[in-house]
Amino acid sequence: MRSENTPFRGGPLDGRVLPILTGPTGHPPKWYEVPVPAHDGRPPTLYAYRREPAGHTKRLGLQRGWVYQYVPEGRERRELRWPWSKPGGGAGAEDAEPKGTEPNG
Image (cartoon, rainbow, N blue to C red; front, side, top):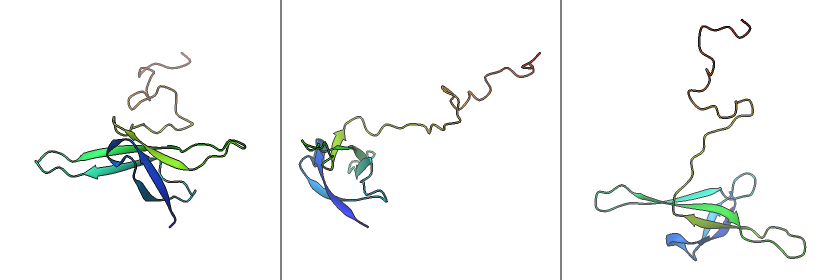
């Protein structure tokens, strides 16, 4: 696998450049999480970094690579959105119509 030296900004890894494995598209992962074990019996800390563009060239506007930016809130969790799903439909929203009623009656 190919790796890319990627700089980190903010947080405990600020200023460091680490080799990050790239995926099949040649890009590093969108999120990079660093687990840090705790020694006092507390749960381990998880530092989250989000991938952002490092900058663009002046003339053609091409991207210059990636940089990981520290996100103190942690990684945002999103639910999967499928093209055939109804908007605003959650886990219990598949039966919006009350049972026992006919749609044409």
